[in-house]
Image (cartoon, one colour):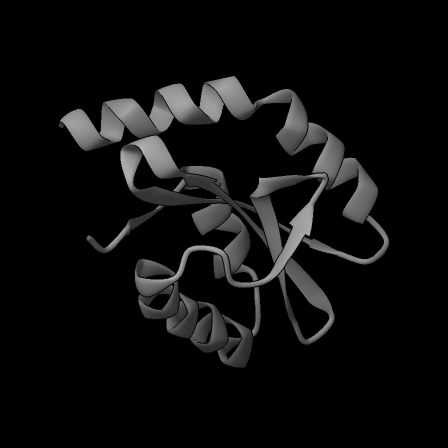
Length: 104
């Protein structure tokens, strides 16, 4: 079964600020992740991953139990650690958010 791909509102806002070419590369990730959600590099845990796009990093969480991928953040190298720490601190909130989105 394929995974479904979702984004948070905050992620969408960050993507809107990126250059068109970066937005297109992110859009191309979605179909790949539907087939194989473990694309990119793991960050501390197998389910927390990043994919580099030009000078940016795109962060997503893989929830096997929900068969879903949730894009949560974008950063550059300068704010990478701050972004990682922020995402790790909100994993339970992201999972709850995703459950509500799937139910609706």
